[in-house]
Length: 255
Image (cartoon, rainbow, N blue to C red; front, side, top):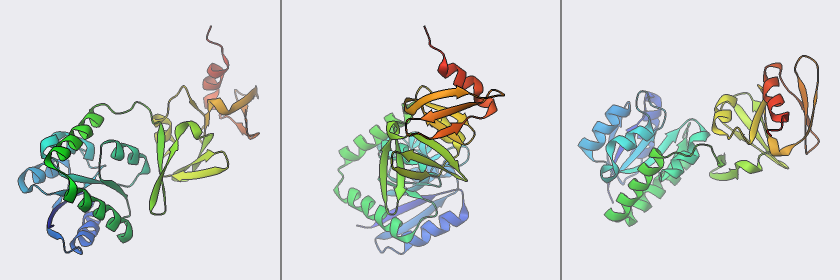
């Protein structure tokens, strides 16, 4: 099966890398490039590629908006490309074949490409259209808060239920999820992580700490509007001064 491929990414080096990897496969007949969302929509309509490597974080029109603009009956097979793990859940929810995390390795590229080729060999037009309709519906009605997190570990992705997370701590450009005896690193800022979580279940008590409120054992006050939060595990975390109102709100009974 000969494949026509579109590479959509606003970073020239990223496009060049994906072009090199795709061009090394003899099944690839032609490769086009797009630098932004608008060019991507135009290229899909003009060239009708079977496979698109679609960067999620493009200016003006992101990867999800590209899918919505093209429409279910005209959208080719999609592999999302992203620098941030937090988009993985959304990529799977909108029925993408796979997602690649930058920087893309040759081994991971081959896995994603084979998945796409396999799907293209076996998919009927009706199945492709149904897949795209599912994709567009998920885009139009995104989940309000995350219920699980996709964690890349080696060449596989594991899914961690949000309810299983005891607490989250900042770790340079990552966050560390602590879940019982295990912990996982996720490439996202603390602000981005906080915005993705249900505020009824998770409370930010410090610029470096978010806790699962169901895992709090007890709280007691310190001076200057600070608190000590003791977790069920026995860990004690000191809150930041600017987060005092949030903790006081947590301590009040709403009746």
